[in-house]
Length: 114
Length: 113
Image 1 (tube, rainbow over the protein chains, first blue to last red):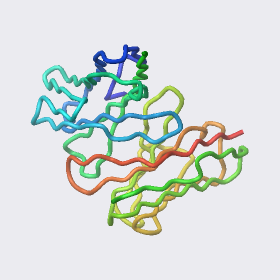
Image 2 (tube, rainbow over the protein chains, first blue to last red; image 1 turned 90 degrees about the vertical axis):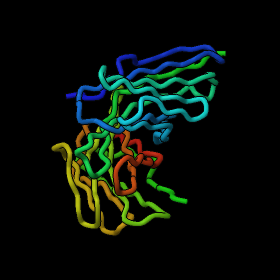
Image 3 (cartoon, rainbow over the protein chains, first blue to last red; image 1 turned 120 degrees about the vertical axis):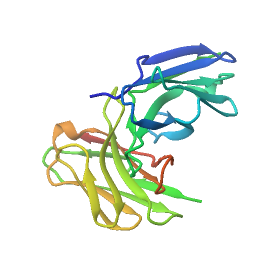
Image 4 (cartoon, chains in turn yellow, red; image 1 turned 180 degrees about the vertical axis):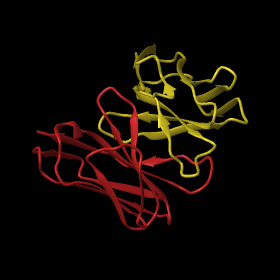
């Protein structure tokens, strides 16, 4: 039962433009959401997170938006750079979990073209 | 600063052979520790987590086991590997408490032949 869904397996964007990655979830108990970036043959690196008490969190070129009523979050990368080409994972954790266990989406492959 | 080490980076093992992957964390104490697996084209699946020495919880039934002999050491094992155990294995740690991110090791690419 996939509770975190990234329905776009891939995204191609021109350098300098905005990348928008989407993520949907089904578990209303999720209250903490994270985005990770992963290069091939490496572990994921943490990008940005948001708790359910907020609807937006910004860190440099990365902004995460949370729409709790729609159970939807998105990651905006502006401007996109060639080094942003990677797989991006959305992850979530329920408020009932005390142990930091994360549920991940299947990932979106982003390719930034010159 | 905290660092996480995971080895080996790649491993090719025959079916039926044993497995031992090791992960250590430096620069923190009493971390939560995790083993995840990424199958081809899929997200990260949590296999095991541990909140303390000797405390292991399994998320999915499988051919693998985990152990935590020391506070900052987490080991993933199998007595007899199956072809379906092939994948990319990731160790991670997080601090105790709410709203903390997990930090991942570099991963181990396991191919069972």
